[in-house]
Length: 534
Image (tube, rainbow, N blue to C red):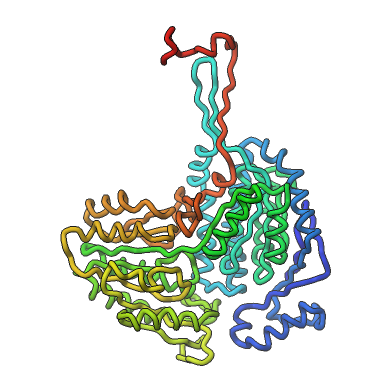
């Protein structure tokens, strides 16, 4: 059994209170028995040395003293680390990339054990690798520091670390999102991570196996990173109240996240918000429909419980019937199963009653069911009473103007439910209407387009200003070097939302001029004529 304490100041501390992790496949096989085992272990009624093999790890639960110690250690280390040359801090990211490649299979297995289907676990680890590879590092180096020589002066435009950054990852993808903090470290910040009590093991494992040794390789002070498994409301409030905290990276739902961002500002903290997505994928009449259908089927990966999957499709009426046929065929092949199985893409869904409400509203108001809509057991058998999975579901919504009257279109549902909106007619200004519809989305994570006509592509890229990422003729969820993996506008990122490069979001711009032999009296009017104009 893996055992981790709170990681503070380069040391592990143990509070005596534990939370245990049971392998997800064991949970699916015997929910009641697995929950009973976990509860007995957490409460000390079952000794750890008598735990069954299905229990893969335990993490010490930290209290407010541990959180305060982590903040104090980070505050003490940040000045030294922030003053470390950028090239040395980037050595940390390069080593992190090397270690992730080396330990790729180990990290994938950890994600699978926590319940991520194997195919999606590999996708998540690919995101860490793309986000730290050499061309991404080289690009961000140019954004973090630039030098210009001008006569007897050297100008530097640089990003300066904000200080102590606290990161609160989401429960659905704790490990991968916690790893985004690596770029906050690369910017010169100290990092404090809260490992959620519901899923702490993967976070602590990745930090110990990847981030800690990479920081040691770069010569970083050990206090620059702390990880504490702790209660969310108390920890977030402690971060807000602490004078040691500068930034808070928060992942969660939009309503709660925007309100928390306002609290951050009220307490003098910079919020970096990663909230819900409700992405639109447009399919034009000249699109490659096989590839477009494959991209739309990404809506069902992880049962739609991934913020960056497509949540709504807008399909040109000339090709809607053919596209829906192809999409329905793909959706029917996506099945549930144990996370260890290589071709499984669905995850259990807790709020199946809410799914039926959203689907029922859409059907009652004129949407048509293309496929899906049922609860399933882990073996794919329909089970409307206790099935923990949802069948990939496609609905057709006719009419663009009233489409967002439906919750299924207007909101992020977090279900394997894809509404396909088909405009009424193929008139002259349809493209303008579709671009306006896409850009008017209250959310703004990423949007995508499938089209061959260069003028259609140009109009889409020029007209869709919302969102942190636009993709054309590409996987909607695939990771790309250089471009950001997260971030967006509106309800996705709050009032200050944009494409999220954590190294840039957790730092601030500063100009520096270093001169030699400059006469201050003459420098005041340097570059002007006798009238004071340039």
